[in-house]
Image (cartoon, rainbow, N blue to C red; front, side, top):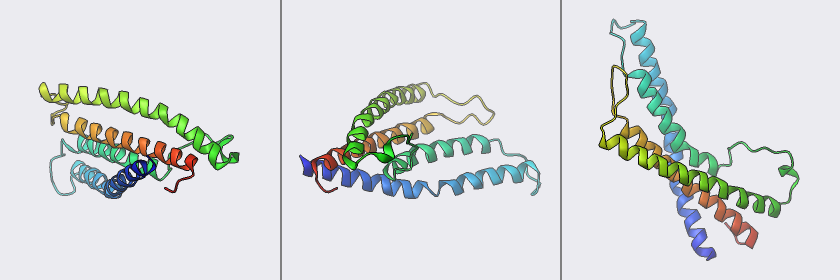
Length: 171
């Protein structure tokens, strides 16, 4: 059982690490999109203002946030209410983390269910945004599904790390 958990942790962490490192550079895409918006709005190049820039920056932010979330969890860069936690022993921290991560797994499972349902609806009915550009919404919702799924996999990986720590196994 320990080796199965270790294998799961190894592969999920590797996938989320690679995706997180790639998505980390998405900030440059967002800056480029917003810079283009500024350039066209102040008419530096005598161009008409672009209609797509604000929504495209929002879509890029969704991908950046949701695909980077698992990487953030993996690096333990998430915010923790640390009133008592820092004084606890490693085993008590592992017990507490293993217990509380179950709430996160439940939450992400419900979120994933809703995201899949919403993506299917959006695709079937060819849902679009109400803006002048009117892009389809299903691609960004698909990014949502992928991001939530990867976050769920990473949450399970963190649970396994805590269980392995409690069992005294190496991670």
